[in-house]
Image 1 (cartoon, rainbow, N blue to C red):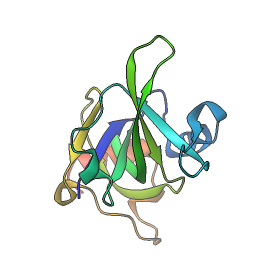
Image 2: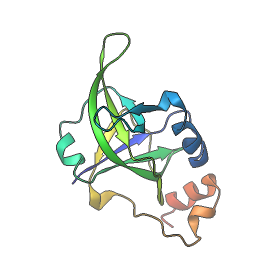
Image 3: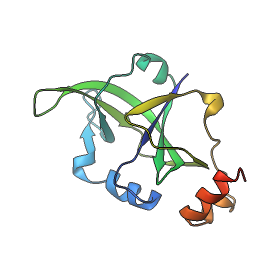
Image 4: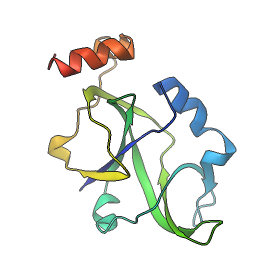
Length: 143
């Protein structure tokens, strides 16, 4: 199994991501099931797509922090309106919060090995209830 990680551009909080993923522009009917699912668009198709789809997730970086993940349901090629090739990541609508971890900006997406992925948060209160700026400072300090 392998995961992917991608920056969420133009979103400043996890709550904003939740709101945006429910907008019609950010959803698409899956071609096989017909179910409306959140999608993330990107240019390049992962060479390890089969491995990623064997239980992998898309980890999301918001405001410099890895804050959540969503299970990848499918990865399909698309042709954009301008005729260029693109890729759609179909996601499970359930957003799973993870232990906040600081990460520098990067372009596109990257592979993320399970051993390097932050653990899911439990339902108990902790760092996840702190403001994002404070979470980032604590993550940078290794706390």
